[in-house]
Image (cartoon, rainbow, N blue to C red; front, side):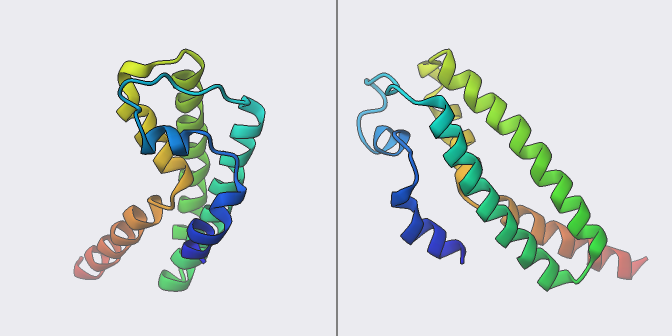
Length: 130
């Protein structure tokens, strides 16, 4: 499902920064954005990736506490990262293009599941040892 979102559905999302980061982002300024449409599309992608990631976490661990923690983590991460991305784009912070690139990447790609899965596994292994 995560691959389906990335491969198939991605062209249907409004993302003018996609071409910006593929080409001459070092010398070009950030393109004009329709902030409401852009952040709505960021939210849709984040929401789809989050739902699928939460399902993966639940299917792997069958732990409601891990699921609740993950939900809180995803909500907090979205709030912090989307606010940071908005500030970076609104004030055209082009000297920090890598920060903008990575904040955007964490919002549109399901990277948190690759962080949470090993963390929960490690926690599960450590709790058995004690």
